[in-house]
Image 1 (cartoon, rainbow, N blue to C red):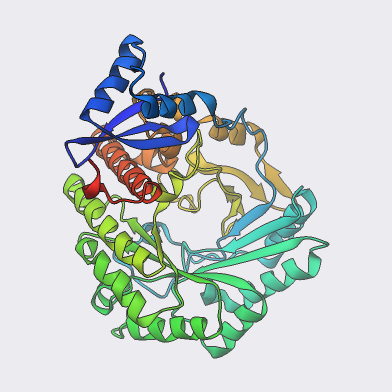
Image 2: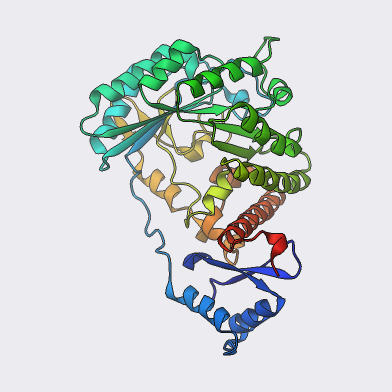
Amino acid sequence: MNDIFILPTYDEDNYIIYAPLSGVSFWANNRAANIIRDYIDKGIEIPSKYAALSKRLEDINKVKIKMPGGVKAKHKMNKATFILSQKCNLACSYCYAEATRSQNTIDKKRIAISVDYILKNSSNKTVGFSFIGGGEPTIDWDLFCWAVNYIKSNSKNQKINLGLVTNATLLNKTRVSWLKGNDVRVSVSFDILPEVQNMQRPFSGNPHNSFDIVDRNLKLLMGNALTTRIRSTITEYSVTLMPKMVQFVVDNYPQIKRLQFEPVSGSVQNMKCFYDKYIDYFFISRDIALRNNIDVYNSLTNATERIRTSFCSGELCITPKGEIVYCHRASSEEDEKFNCFVYGKVEDTVQIQEEKLEYINSISNANFERCFDCFAKWHCAGMCLQNRLMLSEEQLSIQCTFIRKMIKRTLEDRVNICQGRRKEDAS
């Protein structure tokens, strides 16, 4: 009974009945919603004439998703993330790392020790290595190539997944060909529309626009059939432009089939107003994308597809100075909450603080009172731990409201597709 939620929708005459742990969701009109409410609150049996509704509730009772169990004492040893350096050639207006950026670069010895550790300790036949920002990884192109070559040369009977997150400004034909030859999946941080990209992602100390260069290099990536997605940060300026961004991709980058639109965090004055706009325009853009065989998503729409008790499984992320951190966004000792996320060091060996890691892993939606009776708790799982540590109580409340609205709209879309109708057609 505690796993059945009656969710009001934008259509006042219709509700979504949702049981997260059973994976069951369906539309219900006012009458059906009231019958279910009596069933939940008062234990009143469903009248026999409502056989279809009874069947729905039987389905909820029959199927229960197996919950992730226990606290992970050790990290999953099948993947690692490297921040080669925090150097960057762009000056993005919303950069989370700008204030704490250093000029340090990770040395080859630490990379080799970390790679050996993953290859030796992984119980999986597939292991993954990612090279991400905090800066721009391709600034240290030779080091990046050395790391990839070391990984591939030292793997034994293991499938290797390689990923690069880049602003794409430093690519060229030779580098794109090398990425293709080494089967590196590429995620491009790019705000898509020329006016948005040039305003929000300018070069550091350089008047030249970044759009033209990224546009050229994206077309190089597509021309080489490299697996590529675009990740855009949505701000107050661009929030109403998401539909236009999707159409621009349809018209100019037809091979791109995955667009990640994440709302900016922490730098918007009226977050509530911004989030409401974001939800409306996100789903408009998602409809356009669906008609063009493109997946528009964010971390919350992805989260709605699975059940979890913790927001993320954490990272084995190695910083330029060799610290091991749970979240790549806390990659420098200058970051306010850095000590909350660091749980190891790479020196002559990989040193893991097991008790610290176990404590971080133990934090789940069960720790937070506001999660207890929330239908979204199995998806948001108490939200991003860094956000929870950084935000005020008022900001947390706004964030929670946004998360619930996003997940509910995602559920509406899912039910509409499964039942062959859009929300406005439900009756």
